Image (spheres, rainbow, N blue to C red):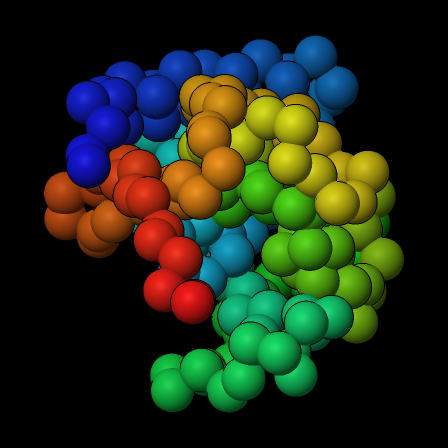
Length: 173
């Protein structure tokens, strides 16, 4: 099933919210970092809309996941790209879907391996309400959704970006 959400409109609204947030907190030159893969797609669009001068950073948090042993090795594990020093920088961390909070926790762990930022603002395209396992919440949210048991949301892309909601069927006996 494909959600009829206008992703372009959500991205425009998120860019406006990020600009407002950074202005109200006097963040002169925030550094945007996207979490691979969907978060990097979203971050790329936002980075272009906001016309940030510093290059876009990209995190691959595969090795930082606390459930790495149960997820197994991903076939395309590539290194993170943080082209600018994160020390004392105000970071806009971008992901596609906030679900349990574990991906964001892993991303923050990796960022702190690179240095100590002044702050981290979390921006997500989709926030799955009431499914958090960790006390992590987004500062900027494109859309909040509540799903039924067995439903999952995923960002498909990179062109075009679309939100997909699928039902996972239990194949056990």
